[in-house]
Length: 576
Image 1: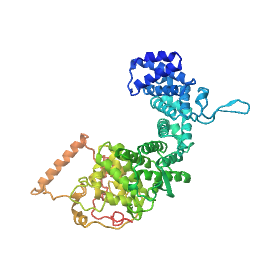
Image 2 (image 1 turned 180 degrees about the horizontal axis):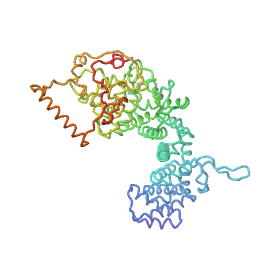
Image 3 (image 1 turned 135 degrees about the horizontal axis):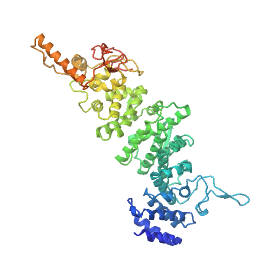
């Protein structure tokens, strides 16, 4: 296709000639995503001509053709200059129906509503976003704006200056209005996601000034078709009382809209999980949490879409303030529910299954596993029932004392294996979950993982000499399995398993020979130390290891980790 011919027809100024040329261009370039760099200037010139044409009064077919051309041209990040000016962005936002400013850049025919006359006949500028009745035009304009924002920082600044987020928010408020089709909803949400992902100021504006959590919570509610039988308890409208596993799957459109909403909510709630929130904010977060619980227990019309929905739901749950996670446990226990201590554990059990699925794949663990691992850890730390349920699944009473903690296919074995993972974040998060499930008791932690696996976390917390971290947990009573009691005295605390008796290497040696071997070992250590291959360390009073020097040779700190006697109350199996 010769782009020069297209440009020549556009330069005639004739609308019919322009329509014919643009339709041909759109038809031939519809699937083009890689562009010839030698034609960069020609494509920029074509873009300028199209933007100029959009400022005129156009017939609907020509208007749509112009927007389609801009959508195609905006795929090329090197040729966006014609579209990133304030006037060009204003024109596109008008046709997208999200303009909140009223420059005289758009012809009167492009307004369906919004421009009115006062009593003296003077025109008043519209004070709300354009209500364009042609949804195909709206969608093409939205697609173009999304492409431009994705590729160009100047356009992102313009979008923030033009307050496009306000225009989009106004239409998002109409989430229960059936007027707007799926594509308008989807690209409204896609644009909102891009704005909140690329601009911190827009993210804050949506969250605070525009009450984004409530706005998008309502959008998610409408998308899923929810009703509220009880406070903070959701159901699918028309399926009240139906167990989650028996609900019909969400459609592709519902799932895609829900995923976009979840992504936006993740952006505007980032770093709020450890913040203190007021009563009104907590109510909003709990309301959102109830909807997220429904997302977690829902499934889509395909395994991949279901996993994507659950993945974004877990990511967002991790952003909620920790006290608000109690909403996951609030629904009543029903027939078929996973019940523990009289509490509905459906959501927690789903989180555990989701985490194990990601764990079994062993692919990109940092990105795929950590959100669910962290969420389970923090939920267990703050909610006693969650911790006890998770411990019953992950760390049941210890019976296998012949295999190392990292060997096997139980969930405990899989998580313990992560404690020596090459990625520091992965191994720290895995260790943290097990430590919390052990109520941050060092002897119990070592019992389930072995000292070798536990050493990293204990060293970081200054607990290598034993003790207990500062977490507040209930007291309990001793309840060990018979298998563990019988083998306890023979368990190697380093490996965490019963080790076969080994022959004494010094058997048959005289005292002089033993002393000679000991001196050889000392000399070897001394050589390694002097050549800086190893560094002698000792425990300080804070439980952490420090370099041992001649000026501070004290190594008398007593390590109580491996004492066979443990206090009955703090480190036992039974919990209350």
